[in-house]
Every structure is written in C-alpha cells, then in structure tokens.
Length: 203
Image 1 (tube, one colour):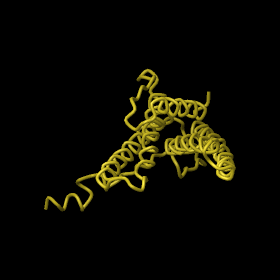
Image 2: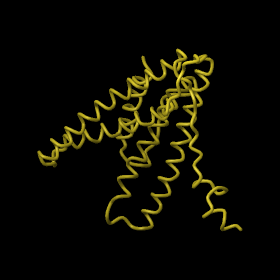
Image 3: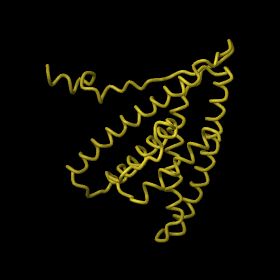
Image 4: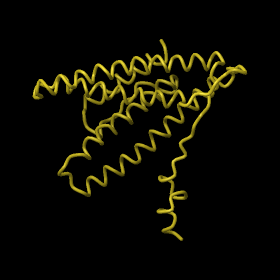
C-alpha cells in the first residue's frame, strides 16, 4: 500500500474514532504502538488535527464567554505547536529513511517536505468528512446541500491529486531525482526566550 493510501485510511479511522465520542476531551485510543512507528505517528497527527478542528468551531460561537474563549485560544495555540512538532518528527522519519538515496547531480529541491504535504492531507480528510455532513444535513436547505455537494466534489479531487503528488515526491526522493530536505518552522512566539512580549517582562 502506498504512503498516501496508508495515511488516508488512518485519517478516516481517527475521524471515525473521534466521532464515536464527539467531544474535544475524547479519549484517544491509538491502536498502533512503537512496533509500527509511522502508523502511530500518523494516527497521533490526525488526532491533534481533529481535536483542533472542533476547538476552532467552538471558539466561534457568538455568545461564548470571554474567559472560555481565551482558555480555548490558549489550547489552540498549544495544539498548533504540537502539530508543528509532530510534522517535524515525521519529516525526521522520512529524512532518516531516505538519507542514503544518493541524489543525482540533476536532482532538484522541493518547496514542501513530505510531512507538511501529509499535514495538508490530514486537514483535507477533516474537510471532506464535515463537508459531507453538511451536504447531507437533513435540516439544511436544498440550496445549502447543493453548494456543499459541489464543494465536496472539489475536495475529493484535491485529495486525489495531493495523494498522487505525495507518492510521486517520495518515489522521486527514493530514486535520487529530488533532494530530501527539512524546513524547520522555528516558531518564536511560543518560546519565552524568543518572544519579546514574554522575556521583556523579566528584564
């Protein structure tokens, strides 16, 4: 099975697992352990995305209490950092896997790493799931359902194309046609020693 098929299958598994409980403090039951590191990581990655998706919905409730909104915003910030850390760990996995791929002299660089492309695939899985819900929501108008069905069609095409692109990228890396490289995010605002609004308070 290709990497993209494995990812898409696990993403669907995560989303289904979450919606059995359907609340942001749902218990995570990752069925994969360190004996299958990649699948374990993919499950963890999509679980973070799924929880954050629903937090983003909650924080947009118009009459949410300010203190509750701030609490959720802080949680989203932490989730974004966890998401970034997880993607970079996945990229380390790919870098180690393909480090001896011996790129040719004509090998090119790619603007996106394999793991960041997989990150987009995870978000697409969530968009597809929830757009499908909207396209089939009984309480929605026919106009709404038609519009969402059209959007769903576009999302499915995007997933097909992105899945193919990920598999092609990894194949080209393995053949030495593309140089594997990592692009660390190095976010500064979450770091007490790098964000002047945080470290200046101690000066």
